Image (cartoon, rainbow, N blue to C red):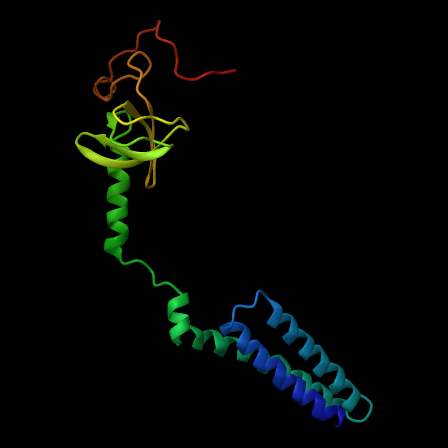
Length: 193
């Protein structure tokens, strides 16, 4: 075969590999093969036309520079419309789905400082009953048995963090809400060292 035939054949292989890379997860192997095919097409085009007709060589390179990105754009445009693409690309959440998450996050934030009781053992995650509601939470790393009083330390997103309740250390939420002055002799609940 002539060099020009090899150049067009490798260009066709490169385009086919680019399209298959969009549809087949290969971890980049198909992209490497496509790049090698593009480089091979350029080498054969150079061998075929550089010394005899440089205009044909540059026309081939110009055609490649338009055809290859166009192929990738069309493949990515078609990908979401295929059955596999619809399964791989998740749809954005509906507004009501996000709103319920925001409401639940606010509900968890209001629980900070409240005292509850473990409904199951926390190892370190489990269920706690706070104000009659069962809440999935996590302890600060300690394993706690069922029936142990706990206080909510923090709530971020959908994660509620609790620790074993110590009446001398943990101020009840009602007292904190009333902004009662703290006893100056009461130690701080953190260490500066």
